[in-house]
Image 1: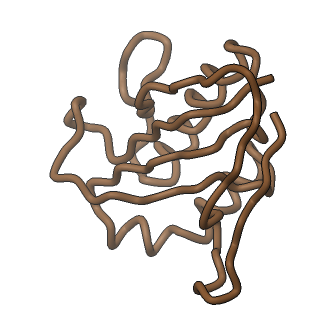
Image 2 (image 1 turned 90 degrees about the vertical axis):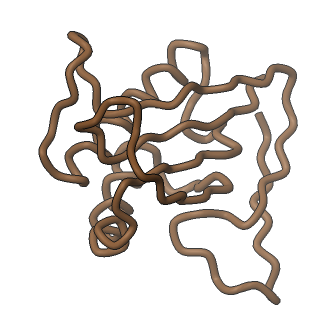
Image 3 (image 1 turned 120 degrees about the vertical axis):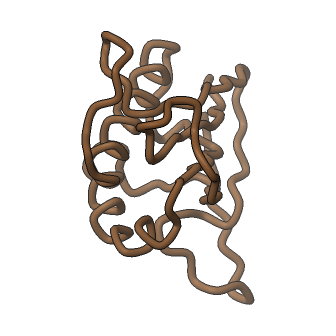
Length: 132
C-alpha cells in the first residue's frame, strides 16, 4: 500500500493520529473489533494500558496474518468505556502504539461507550487497511 498522511495546516496539529489518509492498493482489509482477549477467550489485564496493549497486539496479529503491516492501516477506531481514563493514559498509550505499530498513524477516532461485549473489557480497537 502507499499511504499519504494528510494533515492540513488549518486544523489542529494531530497527536497520535492523522487527519486523513489517502491509501492506494488492491485489497481492502476490514479488521474486527479486538479486545484484550487471550487465546482462551478471557480478558487479560486489569488496567486500561494493559488491555490497550493486548487489544492492539490482537489487531496487529489479524492484520499480519492477512498479509499486512501496521503501515497499511488506513483507519482505526478505539472504543473506550472510560474516556477520562483514556485521556489520562494517552501518553502511555501513545508509547505503546509507537512500540508496536510505529509512527505512521492512521486516521483515528476514540469513542466513549457504556460497555463492550465482554463486561471486563475496557477498550476495543477495530479498523481497516489497504494492502497491495
